Length: 613
Ligand SMILES: Cc1cc2nc3c(=O)[nH]c(=O)nc-3n(C[C@H](O)[C@H](O)[C@H](O)COP(=O)(O)OP(=O)(O)OC[C@H]3O[C@@H](n4cnc5c(N)ncnc54)[C@H](O)[C@@H]3O)c2cc1C
Image (cartoon, rainbow, N blue to C red; front, side, top):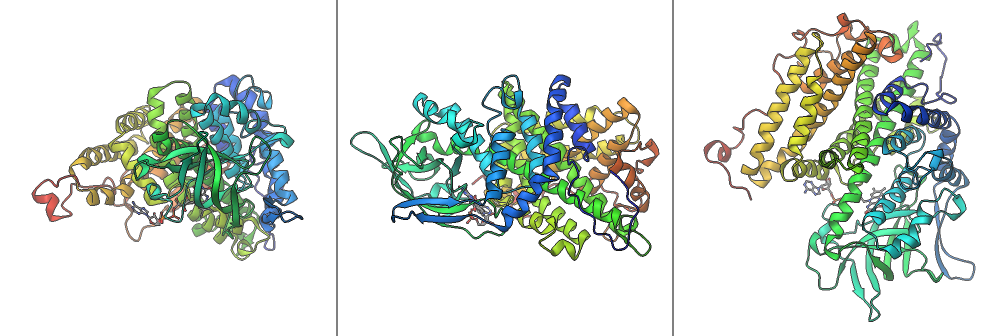
């Protein structure tokens, strides 16, 4: 990154920067995770997306945010049309995402972006990561179109596939149909089993849906995957089937559902979210009738990765805004970035951002492994996506807010990007499962779905690659913490349900930080071996120290000796071994981790083993 001469009256902006070229960490990760020929083919597209994100996409996104979609329920003759009127800036964003970059098509269709065959998930998500630094709202439609296609390919009948896949995966903008996923009802998004939408079968065998969906994003979609209970099916999630509901029927008539109104939202304002009533809407069953919820959860799990990528994108954009501002603007005779407390803000944001990027791209690589047939990657993906979604979406709120603080007064003003970043950052931790619900899903994956052993294996294998003497004591902290997680999870079946649920969030917190630390450490070891640079090991140590050990109440988060390395870390200048902090840092508490110690918390658990409820 450039270091301008700071000026007292400067108000620096990121407009015009290439967000890929500015991001040495992203470049390093793509190079490390992609085989060489894949990286060489991918990089020109990443450069092009980086240029767009720092310029045209950002300008369009700001415009679309100021001009949210509106609903035109009737046409001039009073016929019900339920048209979502999208602003030209949003239409142009759609054209860039779906056509120019083919983001929703590239996992399903050969040759998108000139790729031989279908492009890897890793490339798609690296592009989405860059796109999300400019525009958040549209990435929901991109993702739900992509995942609708995935579900149809996995579970749809040959007829449905023939009718819908060509239009869902086209990069011809005029021919494109978009997909979506609607399940939340007034009865609640978490308790999906309480859904009241009913599916009835006509005498001719056609399914018709009756009921209301309360949150319907990408409300202008052409095809929705939705959940409904066939008449006579059992209550709860077991009785829910997945249906495809088109907006227009094959004979050209409008299907019997209405878009009642659009929501007035805090963030993601460019994209339409509405309320829908199915009034006998014609629908087609997707997959087996008793597998609807399971299939929908598979779709949601993929969407959660997209969600985590966007959160990582928000963190990175927030960090970039802060670095550019703090280096270009002066106060008290120095660049803001030289003031100790502000350096501390920047360093903490940098660690969060770098960890999140590493985690989400790592999960994208695991997704490719699953699709290539690895059973272990299938299990890991099951766990890593809720885990990544859980932490990154919560932390994105904090990082975006910190960035607003760094730009301060201007940060609060809507002409600058910070306010939009803050508003958008709040959604990730609500949709596709709130943080509580996702932490419980992590618990289920660890305890019941066989994900613990692959997770322990992955983290310990990554940590075992680290031989650096300065990093080793911190790796040992991580290994000890991993042991406590294992003990705790293995003990869960013996706890009562309430006791167990109360541990879901602390364990998800720690599991995320362990996974992130293990990737940062092993990447750090690789960088050190390749070019004798301790930069990534320093990031790994500071991250592990920040999140795997408790802090003394009055200690600085980063002592001055760490902060001295901020610029070298930002600019990827060589960092020596001596930069790594000593393990017995006096500013820190001595105990090994902040996580679980054997339970003495309740009388029940200390006297007799509680029965699982
Ligand atoms: C802008 C926007 C767009 C959306 N788009 C869509 C869409 O396209 N399709 C769709 O299907 N949905 C969509 N949603 C809905 C979203 O997925 C739900 O809002 C979310 O799942 C939470 O459901 P709820 O709002 O009904 O909250 P509730 O389920 O009522 O939850 C309320 C509170 O209870 C907590 N809670 C619930 N269960 C538990 C538990 N077991 N243990 C502990 N705490 C718990 C939650 O964490 C939360 O804090 C959208 C939401 C928004 C805001």
